[in-house]
Image (cartoon, rainbow, N blue to C red):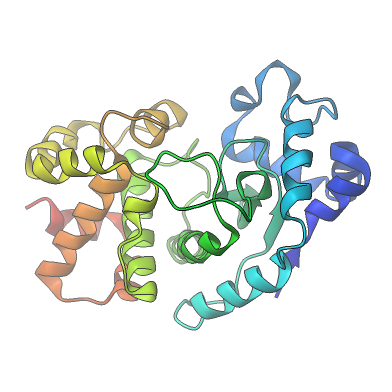
Length: 270
């Protein structure tokens, strides 16, 4: 299973060494999100201001057995998912988040931002800046589910090219799968309870209200619904949609994960 310990090169020679040894990784960050999130420095700049803080934090958790942990979690998820596990880079997301699915020349790969982890971190209400290494248990199956859906449906693995409808169901199906795999709800780990309560209470109304936007694409619509502090959580809306589909059809989470967007919406929005 291809788990890439990119953080070792980062600790040994900084971002410049990462760009030399794994040039496809900075390219994937830019391909996925565009240049804007990385500021005027750009994703290739060895003096990017996110690097010193990332290095300091990664040194704190470098002995957490990341390679074995990631490989085991991906194996467990892919006992239920089609195809081989995706490549998983253990390194930095330059502060964007603890884990993500990136587009590497159009292929979905997983990235883990180790700067967002700390062995001393304790569970607390979201939003949070640091996570315990054990919390990777919720993140890697979620990202593996994204990868499986991208592959099965031929979707581009970047929000720059996805419609809001695809974004909602990408997150909803990943949450449904991860909840089923772990036997617990995972959305409250990263969505503040007041936000979750608000979306659940107004769910039917919100689902009707967003229908005119379902075909919109790109980073602006992604940020509106999935950015930190988004007024309406696309994660909760996506999960509400797939739960409505599941209640109507009785299908299991893996089958729903591989079901096209229009088929889910045709049932969930009726």
